[in-house]
Length: 115
Image (cartoon, rainbow, N blue to C red; front, side, top):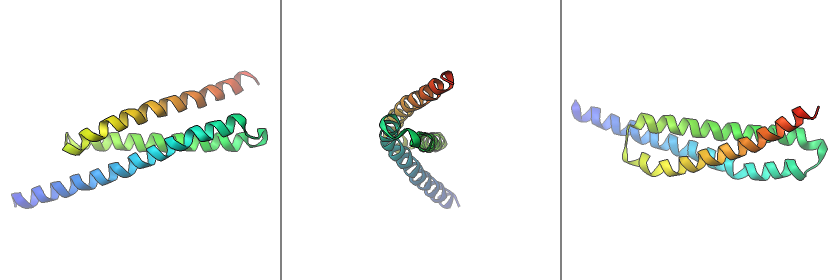
């Protein structure tokens, strides 16, 4: 009975690690694409700025969701060995996300202030 419980606990931790990896990959890909989208918004067609702004918002939202879910999963894992290696990546993702959100929000504020 105790052995089965330990096996199930390990299976749950393995699943949590896989889910965390998936969400971290989502975050990473969205953050890799975000600078390109920010650049397209800056130098692209004026008529496409609305569409580009929506794309940027979507990328940042998905990155934020991936980061948030990863952090929750790591907290749930309660110090499992695999969580330690992921923390430095999550710290980098957090910094990048904050930077891109700052840029995007600044552009929104500029538009608002110029109407």
